Image (cartoon, rainbow, N blue to C red; front, side, top):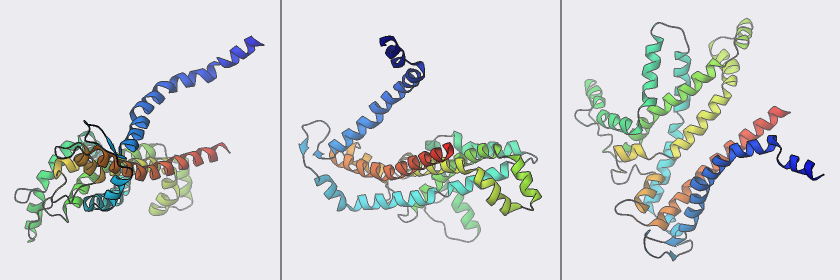
Length: 300
């Protein structure tokens, strides 16, 4: 009886998946779950990161509600969230174009892949030069048509949109790659059946191709939304939060308050991090629920 119990306890079909999952789970606990818990804890303290922490309860969150810079950062995050989603239809259109057999298609693909392989720092520098008030290519084009030059990154109204446009460049390339992979898996028999039924262009795209691209669209949504909420490096390179703090987002404002030269307000920065985490948690929970629902539907 005891031998049967021992075999059941060390059943390879149970133990092997656990052993494979164990390192990932440990790293996830160490680098994700525990820091999240620490951030929640520190957000209830006033602490400079070195001295003794002072318990202040919800005072950091109360100050956030009255902080104009926090409000601007939150609204900028919403702008990023909405406008960043333009990368998905743009990536789909480019993928549909590149999924054809035309002369020089490899060269076109290389050009569209290019922004995906370069770092965000380089993207930020390229667009900073592109937006230069005097020497930039944008104003060279605008003045050709008789319009007045504009200082995109120096204008508090335009600066955020200028940074988002820079972020859309590599994000569109990423979505394009996802859709190109999805298009390779489209069932040719369904395409042929659609043609026999008279489906062309938009009807073919809407009724036959897009339903088969649903997994790629789902991943594109997940990556794009999380990327929009994590936006930091482009802002740091192109504007450093300016002009007058108009391009700050929550992640950048958290960095300024907690870790920058004029910050070291760990409790306040942690409170900002907690708010950003809760916003992301809404989307992550929805995506996980969608995946679970689809997986459950696939079993039945």
